[in-house]
Length: 167
Image (cartoon, rainbow, N blue to C red):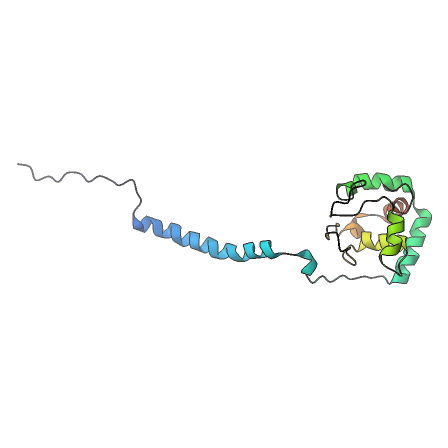
């Protein structure tokens, strides 16, 4: 008679000890993810404290806008709008909650933020988009146009946007 013990079957289920590291790692990931999820779900850009450093007074904006309009070429401004993808948000004739259309922009801009003229307001909106955000629109304007655009490009954009051809 043989006293051999039959071989034990290996269970296909992991033991409790094998699950402990998985549980610990899962708990750590959840604890780390909670603050990020909270921020993501509660973020409202309009409630964020934004420091807008305006290096120009209203008078300086007016003077710069006037000087830029003297050298600006509206035809080049139209091409720059295409180049920089502005129509993605400023869709022709569409009020989409992201940005206003360019149609009648000069007239609308002239009334948007007194005492600024239309060209000065448009210039401020391009260079310092967080200085004044219109209630019905999100603050989605790129923040780097003051670094990306040359003076001539800025002049051309301003000339186009204040022209009756702006669409």
